[in-house]
Length: 152
Image (tube, rainbow, N blue to C red; front, side, top):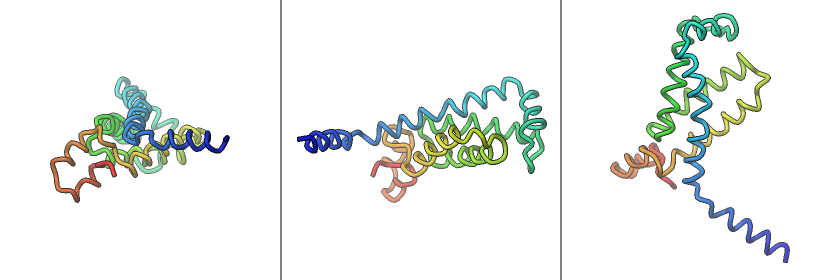
């Protein structure tokens, strides 16, 4: 009796549409980076100061790092939200997440792990059918469907 009930619950969960999960993951990750980028854009001098005094990245000069970080934090989430070049757009955010984790705020690993997991999900599963990528894939050769994230 109990195993039948558990089986019914599992069967119900198994039909949850992956396309909805793909859309929700895209929507969920956008504000994390968008808010940070927008904050930098509103006060670029303060952002440069943060890169100079607090973040202290070893390779890039603070001004360049602030402008590049702002561009990535605004452009990539916008692409992910609409589902355009989605898989490609996850890559700089994954790199940014790893940089933040290992060079800036290592104690914030629970947040960074969550961001990383969502981004890797989007990277490996694609944006789903509710995306510009899927629309483009529907008008291209089948071999390009995997690039755009046509559902499997």
